[in-house]
Length: 392
Image (cartoon, rainbow, N blue to C red):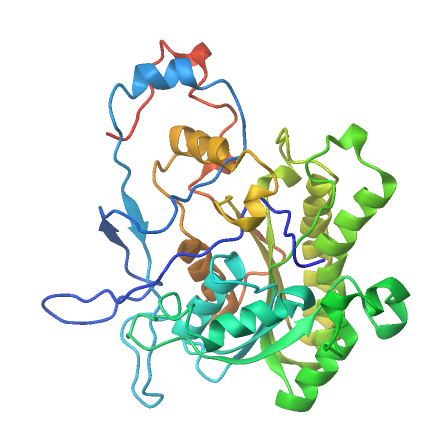
C-alpha cells in the first residue's frame, strides 16, 4: 500500500527564493549552484549505503563539531508564460504531471511536485486512500503553505488530488475486507485503472508520471525471517505498482513524455536492517526500469528512469528504525560531506522530466552525495592511520 512507504526516506525540504543582490534573478537549477551555510529549521537530512563501526574513527577525524556545507539548487518558477527564461532553464510550462504517492509535505513525492511546479508544470497527485482526508484537510487549512512556497514567492498549486491504492489494478482485484474497511469508506475509483480513467476524463492526457511510493509490511525483519506473503507484498507495492501505473497511463501520455520512479542503493548493496524483501523490490524496480524504457520508448516515445536517492528522516524512514545511524554514516563517508535535501532529488527529477534529458532513458541516476561509489566505509577503525581527506 501507499501509506507505510518502506523506502529509507521520502522527505521534503522547503524551497525559498534565491535572489542575486545585483541582478535579482531567480537561480536556475540547470546552470547555477549556490553554497550556503545556514541552520535548517527542518530535520537534518542525508543518505547511506553501508553500515559499519564508526565511533572510534570518528573521534579521531572529527575532534570537534563539524560544519557541513549545504549545496542548494533552485528550479525557476516563471509566472509569465510569454517571457523567455534566461540561460539554460528547465522549462516544463504546458506539461502536466501525475505524482503517485504524495500524502504529506515532507516526502520525496512532495519535493518532486514542487520542483516540477517551479519549472512550470501543472501538478495532479494520487494519495493513498486512508491518508486522503488528512492530506486534503491539511491543504485546505493552510498547514502546508510554508512548504508550498516556490522560488518566485508564489505557492505551489495542486490542481487535483485523486484517492489511489496502487496495490490494486482494477475493482475486481480488491478483496472484500478492503472494500468494507472504514478507512476506504467514502472514496471511490481508487484502483490504478480507475484513477487513470478519471485523469483521462478530467484532463485528457499527461506528460510526466512519477512513482513515489513503496511498502514492505515486514521491512524490519531479516530476509531469512520474511514470510512469502510479506516478500510478495513488498514487490507488489514497491515495484509492480510502477509497472501497473505506467501500463495504464501510457495510452494517455503524450509522446516525448517521461516517467520517473525512486529506488535505493539496497538494490545492489547489503544494508543490514533493510529487510522484508524491500531490497529485492528495489532491485526489481531497477531491472523493470530498463525493460520498460525499451518497451515504452519503442511503443510510445516515453522515457523511463529511476532515481537512487539517499534516505532522509521521514515518517517512512522511521519504520526502519535506524535512520539516524544511516544519516551519520553518510556524513562521515560520502564523497560530498553535506546534507542531502529532498529538493536536490526533486530538481534531479525535474531535469529527467524535461527535454534537457531527451536522450536519457533506462538509467539509474544516483542522488546521494556520491555514497554509492564507495566500496568501504572510511570511518572504520581499519582506516584510522590513513590520511583520508575530510571536510573541515
